[in-house]
Image (cartoon, rainbow, N blue to C red; front, top):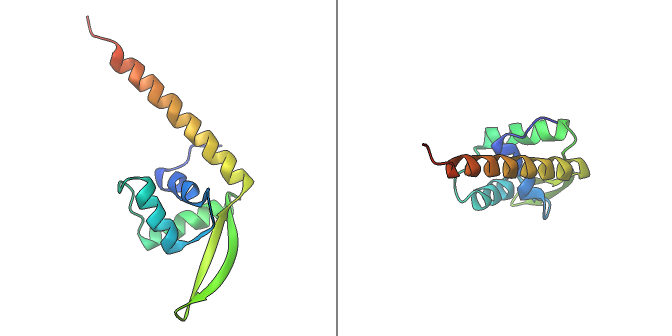
Length: 106
């Protein structure tokens, strides 16, 4: 599997502990990324559509809230696998970069 985009990785991470609706996902992504990733509505739903098409996310339920339907999404087993692989890839990259920074030029 190809590496995940930063927004996709954070969306999967936001769903790793509980199903969430769109606004909840966007808020959790902001928290997890310490504000570095802010998802606009179009971006968020584009990412969710792609992750759903790839089988990494699936619909969980719908609830009516203040006259509007909230659609909840949850991570799948394949999504957990992809997120685990992405975390390992990023950790390996970080180790390689830190090792390179530790080398002092002659």
